[in-house]
Length: 179
Image (tube, rainbow, N blue to C red):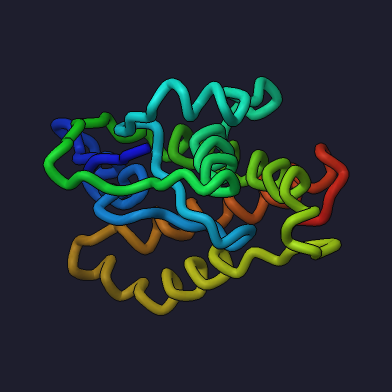
């Protein structure tokens, strides 16, 4: 499999300009704290059909996170995943704070299911995801950026809050402990 870069498509609103783009542009392989296997975001990726069939295709239970799941299953079977920087796709970002919150909440909810699905490989009974807390505290430290007209710390607080709430909700919903 191979992932390419993801760029912002004609950002107009402040959230489109300053909010995070998918996988921060996908210039390198991505990793989640759950399992140290790489993944690429499906918004710009390609895979050999044979490999996708070999790992059983998409998991219908995952409303979000199929890109991670497919890549992890490919990794377990020793398939290789890479990045092709010359493959570029332009992707619209979320236009409103509400949509930005909802997408990160959904990502976090289904990360709980990914943890449950791969718990046997991690040998862990529960997981505490430190990314959201680091993001939150770093945003608090950088609130002075607002004085320079950069709203990014506020968007990071929205993202961190959505992730924390999504992890808690997903933990209850999927009956696992991933916070």
